[in-house]
Image 1 (cartoon, helix red, strand yellow):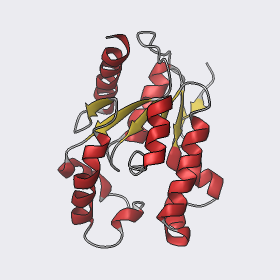
Image 2 (cartoon, helix red, strand yellow):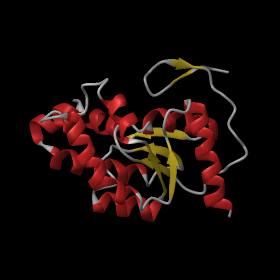
Image 3 (cartoon, one colour):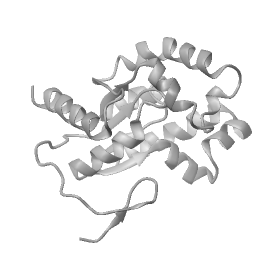
Image 4 (cartoon, helix red, strand yellow):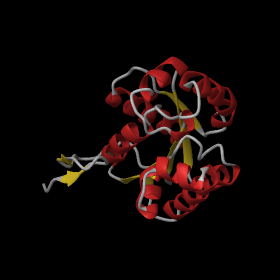
Length: 194
C-alpha cells in the first residue's frame, strides 16, 4: 500500500477502514478549542475510510495566511464569513468528516447549514482540560486580549448551551485518542441505527 500524508503533513501508512459503521452523511465535529476536533476527526475519518477536512486549514489555504493573521488583519467577522463559505462548499462534497473552528456552530447560519446537511457531533471537554490544552499554543486569537482562563470560561458559559444542540455529544477528556474515536463510533451507531 502506498503511504499518504496525515493532516499535519506527516507520512502515514493507510489502514483498512472499519466496516462496522457506514456514515449516511457527512459528520461535522463541533466544540471548543482544545476539545480535540482535528486530532479525533482525522483518526475517525481514517478509520471509517472517508476523507477529512479541517475548516481552519481550509480557510488558511484559501486566504494564504493563518487564522490569527485573518483575525488581526480583517477581524472575526471576515473569518466567520470565510469559514461559512468553506463549510457550505465542504457539505456539497462526498461524505466525509469535518472538523470546525470553535465558533462555527455558534454562528447561526453555519449551524443551520450543518444541521440541514450533516450529522453534528459535539466533542465536549471539561473546562480545566480545555485550558490545559489551549495554553500550550499561541494560535488562539480569541484568547489574546486578556486573561486566557477567564476568556475561556466566559466562552464556555455562552457556547456550551449552543453546542448542546448538536445531534450527538461525546466526552473528550483525558482518554487516549483511540478510546475517544471508539466512543464516537459507538455514539454514531446509536444515532444512525437506533
